[in-house]
Image 1 (tube, rainbow, N blue to C red):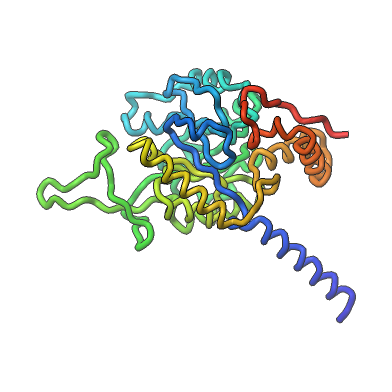
Image 2 (cartoon, helix red, strand yellow; image 1 turned 180 degrees about the horizontal axis):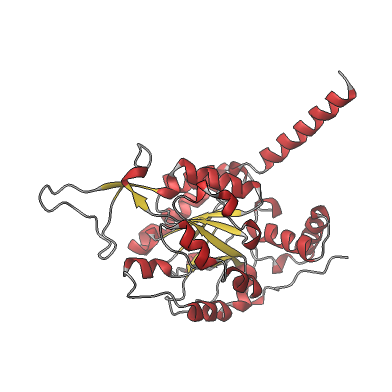
Length: 332
């Protein structure tokens, strides 16, 4: 075998190793609940809270969390509860002291319309970053066909949103359609039969979009995940976080159940709680590499050294979130 062939095989082996390390099964998935529960604010790395500007309360203490934009309420109310950019940015400013434990903040979107979402989100993405948050762009129906139109450098997390349609129906993508106004399953007045639809975020197109985002080093979040089966699917296609409202429909009973989902999936990954499976640490590595223009191996070493020297300040190990430091050391 020639030297050139040996070098080619070495490169192929190295690429295979990288892909195995980045396999979704080797990454923990974090679940965010819209219900404020003590179990979700105790500093656990894979179970936190999804906040919105409409909640009106500031939970203390607060562990891992993210900020949604509240546009879903605008959608289901048919505009009666319009999105307010001023309120949204004020909401982010209120939590500025805890942004080191924030996974992302979601720019405003338009449900079911990828083009209008881009137009609405792009002016807000830099405002989110300016405040020290990781900016999330919501992916809507059809975006997978326009990957060259996606402003990849302007956001940090891809949020799988999208709508519902009979066009997406399949054996594995099948849910009962709910009336947006009442939130109840719709039934035909004459036949009494419900209407079945599929969800865009569960289509192969959304999975391809997720793969491209992961290839580009973006984290991916899936919205409205309310079962172990769906959470496992989200993890399988490469999502690093998901949210749902399941706990709100019976907090005392459903909270342990959701924790059981997370325990099951993250134990299956057989990954230790280290920087490679920690979304916060990966974020800090990217920040150091881009801010100080240093190699990622150097940024990684800086983060590892900081966590080793200050274990009590690491977000995932802290017992007093208010005392956690927000700054990492400047690269040498």
